[in-house]
Length: 157
Image (tube, rainbow, N blue to C red; front, side, top):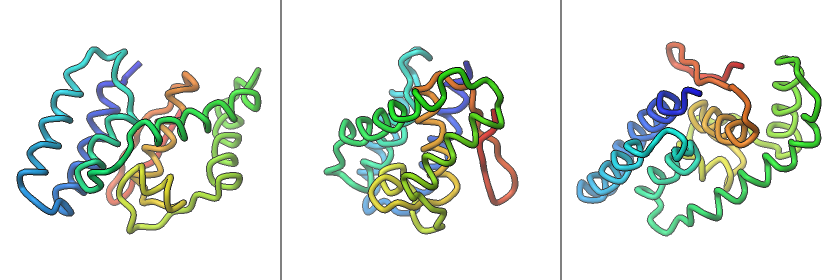
């Protein structure tokens, strides 16, 4: 599993957004230190959603991390029966995408920067959407990877 690399890429992307939006230097430093401590954890203890939400807490100090973790856990639980016995990568992607994009009605919009934004507003930029996919698939023990190209990013199996 490549959790450390995934979380570092996710955190880097989110931290760049957070740095641009953070209301104070002291808050930015506090968040940076929390994220730095988080990525020092053993690989099996790192959770993409939790790491992303730690960064979002920089902008949204009252953010309840566990509330969002519970929402992502629920998405993964909803998907488990639908994915039972499915082995074809194309089918796995189709089922997960249908759940996130159709059933949950989550859309692409370039002005939402954090995982909490996606879950609250129902839309997010490509970093947010990839973070959501990776957070859900991590709970499903699926081998999705973060892929990046100029001006965009996406998931791959």
